[in-house]
Image 1 (cartoon, rainbow over the protein chains, first blue to last red):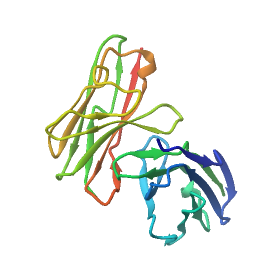
Image 2: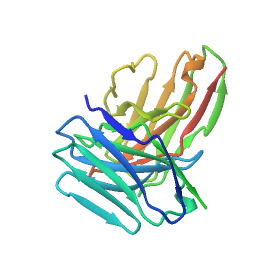
Image 3: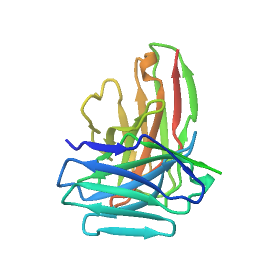
Image 4: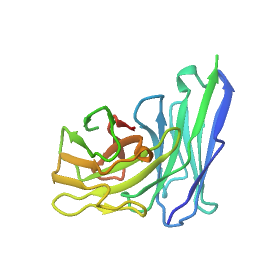
Length: 111
Length: 113
C-alpha cells in the first residue's frame, strides 16, 4: 500500500518568515494530494489540494508543489502569522477513497 | 461544504463495554469514512461506510471490533466493541461528494478506563 512520509515533525519560524513542509509518497498511482490543518482540539481542515495533472497551486499565502517524478510534494506558507500555528498533515490518494496521511508537522510561529 | 456533526462529542467508558458513535451530514454524500486519531498521532482510516452494504475495512481493523452501519446517504454509525484502554482515541467521520475531497466531522473523544 501507499506510504507517506512527512518532514519535519516540528517546525518553528519567526512571524513573517516562510515555512516549508515536505512529503514523499511511494505509490506512483497516487493522483490526489490534500493538505489539512488541525488546530488543538479541533477537526482537520482542508487548506489546499493538488491533483497529479498540476505542478503547482497557490491560494493567497499558501502554495503546494508536486514533483511526480520524484514522488514528493510540499506545502509552502509565506508571511507566516501566529494563527498559522497548528499541526499540518499531508495525504496521498489513488482512488479518492483511501487517504494515506503523513505523520504530521507541528508548526509554531513565534511572534 | 457539508455540515457534519458527531455524537457524542466525548465519552468516558469502562473496559469491556461498547460505544456507538453517530455521524450526521446535512446533505447527501457519496462516501463516508471513519478514522481513528490516537493522541498526538496522525489519522488512520478504519473503514469506508458503504450505503446499503457492508463496510470496507482497512488492514488491522475488523467488523467484530468496529461494526459500522450506513442506512442512508446522510448518516453512519461506528461502534467500538469490547473496549480496552488501547481504544482511547479520537474517532472522526469524514465525507466526500466526489472530486476526492474529504471533509471531517468534529470528532468523538473516547477515554476507556
